Length: 586
Image 1: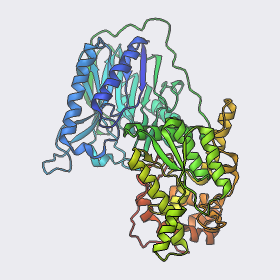
Image 2: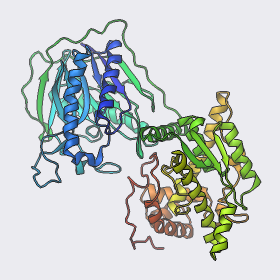
Image 3: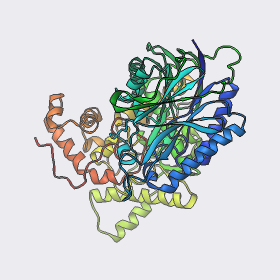
Image 4: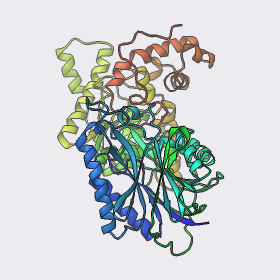
């Protein structure tokens, strides 16, 4: 049986940076060549970054992607890498955009993969299954392909597929079995969700069985707006054996020698096979580079605990949002509470303490222990700590306006927001807001106050998970002999906005241990009232919570973007009308 040394390049592209992404391909292909690789794979839409969204409709961008692909093929050859087959995802088109008046049936923008070899583009494949759920809108952007591309590399027949092709039965993987391929390549831009890695391996095993072939699954890493990609690239044999698996949330070159069945002596004829798909075969005649030295073993990365996985996702999402948008630093309000403490710790882990400014913004209602906790966190993490009392500014407003009750509470939050935005304007910081998913769900925030900011690292993190993350991060630091970043008193004290004397969250909201399961069922699970009652929740509490969620849609629509970690994040995943009279009645 032939042996192919595969190199799965788990890298971090940037949307729109065609030159930078092409340079990534060249650098990592060189690394793969130095490791003796004979076949190199890069993620979905590698050249353009993913997702490109409405850039698809710009013909100038499509043309730039096409040109960049051919230029990359020539550059690889000029680098002395032309004899190494390289699979790269890119944006292609074989007709006008589907939204244009001159659109043609069955033609348009394509989510594509190309095989580069000998300085040229020798084969292409267009994604067949186009996801149109959750964060995906690919039916809006792309036309599905109807052809399975099979290339012969090193005496092995290899089928090219892209991401969603793996997530649905039939189509390319059924055709791959009929074509008798030995290897199916699947290049991905698969966004992270908690526990998705537990689903991915069984899924790849099912497709390996369906295709009767080994699968090389390569996924990108990195943050792109609300999305974060964790990698988790892998190679799975036809019998379901996991051969190699890359770590999550880091760039990584997974190099592994794979024994594969030899292709038939003669190329089978092209033609139509299962599900209306056609088959096109392309041989690569040139000899591959020799795989010198001892056998390459990629290793199998072990999974980590949920809290560690989420923390790494949030750190990567925040870091890339800041760095890819070229912000020099971030600023946030430090209240001494658990949410701002977790956001501060995430920011320090993502950017380093020298790029994080934490501002204590005390009013007359701020407790001494909260002020002390904020200062303690600053000392533990080493961030740039400042104190800016807000009471003189609040008093000026109150001296000129007749305000009372909750309006005064909101005024304090808005004064804090003004100060943070002023510091952002003055010094170029990105303002981080700190509201968790539970608060966003029920509208427990002040518009243009504590909701102010350009990015929210914990937007998709339920309050109960906030506490778990804080405890995990402190324990992880202690295990490594480091100072835990979050004061224990911030974790243990009852949550409070401290906008009025003795105020606690529990004055307004059910206990978070009661609230979060209802919210998870309603928001993430789309359960109605009857489903929530059947799940064992108190009907009176359900009615109260659902009213708060439904009436807060206008607030959520104005909230900052934040890293998605759940199956249904506010914004890209959960899209409900603001003007909406439907209610889950009791």
